[in-house]
Length: 182
Length: 182
Image 1 (cartoon, chains in turn cyan, red):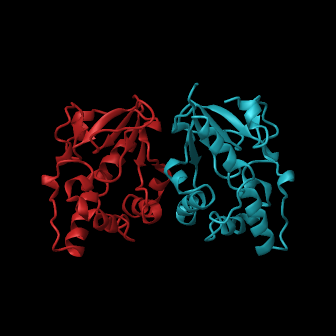
Image 2 (tube, helix red, strand yellow; image 1 turned 180 degrees about the vertical axis):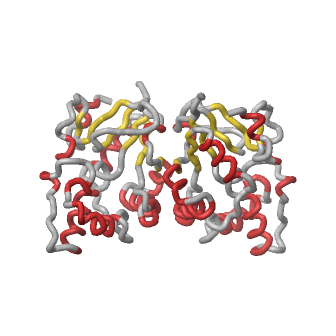
Image 3 (tube, helix red, strand yellow; image 1 turned 30 degrees about the horizontal axis):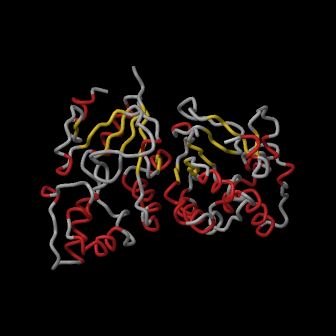
């Protein structure tokens, strides 16, 4: 078999970042508008909300517990376990927000709690994923800008805000096996 | 000019891991033997101490504040600033200890405090540095094992425990400019 290095994004692919944000947003700012995931037009949260709410959005993302308490996206854990069982090398490749204080360590805690401690040893934390080597990156971000032309094949994890991207490699955790044929 | 991606290890290259350990060790365990840096035979701390002290060594490395309070290695900050000023892209490439709890976030704090907040955006945290792309990696570890044959040139940062490695690319923060000729 052809052993592959598979990089897996965290927010929106393993951890329910969007759901966690919406829930916290509606609770903390019930009188502000909110944008349900299916109506999100672009990847960056900020671009989907009125510009004057930037501070409020930041206050959700940087709050202690936000990243640690995100729900797990159904079937994600089983999918990466299956990839490993097939003999591939799976790594969790994640970009922290710039205000790293309550993000970086909580991402490790999240992985330990939701996927198991051993997975924390397979984390690669970087703001520039184009500097990471892999056969593929599974990510919901529409495009990746970085210093290098990526060496990985880009597998788009399906999301409402990336529907405009044309690709044969669009997956969910329901259909990934058929599409990736690992 | 030829713009290079330069990966810089943290412990032993920018942060005085060895000095910080010795100081904490002598303070916490004054009656146990200690091994001065110049007498260290191998890279891994544990291998230089009697086997029955593993738990005590771990207690130093996992203590809150250990990583955050390491001193900065003289001239390191100036060196990486100079590399950036020359037009190169410098990243801090660091491997956390497996007990990540008091290590990962403190490494970010250390970088922010000692090098400046903007450098935290240039951190790449991974246990396997062979998965990172760069033109060179500056590191004091004698050898790098990982999933891939590294794409970077290996620049050894001089340390007592890596003297046995034969290389033309051995630097300190005093002579790096002459040897690397960036």
